[in-house]
Image (tube, rainbow, N blue to C red; front, top):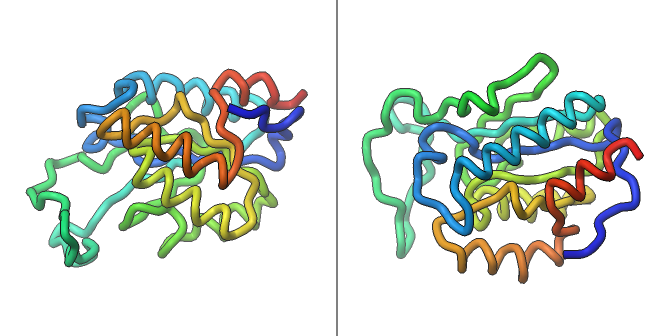
Length: 194
């Protein structure tokens, strides 16, 4: 991991947390549990709020009839199943607080089809601190889109997990260093408001 920034100005940054919701955090994950990711993400959110940083909570949700679910004409589709009530609600530890921005997405990435970019630009935030589940799906898709839009990225490795340690490691070691700076939550907290 490289040193991301000497200083992180909370007035220019947004913490963007991907899919920390009941139906996603219920999965078996690696290299760390969903509980560990949530705990680390909640600590980051608390620090951001306390220092005037912006917290943006992203979750995936669909219409009750599934009409807005992306088509799966792919070689390896996700299994289709009935979604339990409340699957798309944020876990209690990441419950939205006053001043947080909530984004609902309908695909892996948090930019396409949402107002994430608009909300960031209107608040003059050019740095995204990114975490969530799953590393190589929602987080990676969002990171790629953010990079293409010119945002500075800090990718918080210990605030992420995936379905396998290998999937997580490939994104962290091979993709993320080309999009931004891979760091830890402690790195981010230490640089906030210095």
